[in-house]
Length: 469
Image (cartoon, rainbow, N blue to C red; front, side, top):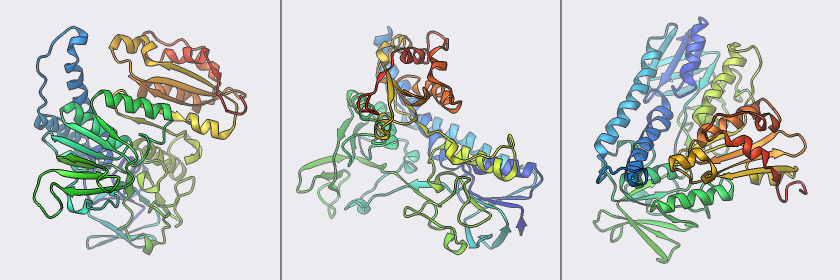
């Protein structure tokens, strides 16, 4: 069967691309081997942020006395928490499936797609061909090589979605956003939690002051943190050959430290779902980590084949996947403003959804220092932000970095209540290439977190060791 376009995968980039291409009259095939909606809808953003909201509600209820009320003994019903999560996920999942299966000029194939040649794929017993193929297959949890891991039961971000009970003691292996979000939410649900990371600090992609502040926030909630765990071994209680319910994690070798937990979450990164697509038969080039190599317009090494979303290694977030769709749609189908779009046009931005959340845009302070450019820094503690103080959520800080010569904003890190929303004030100014004085002179609404962005920009100081400043 020949199509004008074939889309492999129904994650964040695939369905909107299918809708737009089909809307132009093209005959489109979209292939999905698992659950419609991809990681974000099923095991990523949608379910985890739903769980985070439940954990936040329980946390605030326990703090009732600080707000002048008592909610009594707070008990979390994990079956109801999971049911709420499943309801939210189900709406999104079924919505994606329904929209694709009812889409005119589009046929949905449910099965595993494998390339048989550069422009032909097989799904079950059917062979599909097209001059344009778009790969949107996402990524999955990476499982590290840890002695004993293959002989103990462990969880990943995907299998955590099936839990409807409260782990007595959750061991979390990893120190980035997945590990921290799950660690904090399950601590708030009532589990004992220990986070173990091989690094010397949490979220190493962030600045050290951000990492330190996050560690303090988690520690104050009773989460145990173990850093520098470079030598690990996992056993069942009493040894691998004996019966027991607990998981034993030995750190440092030689019995230097031993942790016991009822459950283990492995959250040490992601790997692309590219190892079973037959990409070698198509001639699509991969990098050393298995990501599909793409150019600035997301074209692969094979003409007429594109790669979007997590599988191309150019973002790894829902918002970057959606932007991948916009880039391809603009360049391939001229669907937007008629201007070419490129990956290099976008400014790095992401959030970590612990509570309080971290929102970040552009360069970190460490990256600015490394660049050697003269820079200015503005910083304010959240306890000095009236909106945060009024809400009783004063943990964290906001900081912003500015080029001392061009006056353009280089980056910002907002760790605090509303930080994931307020960061967009900065991000939009950066896209506009507006001087920081535009934001400094803006009149923001009181009382909000964002109103203190102009205040920070009034009090800039030279960044030490940056461009000789």
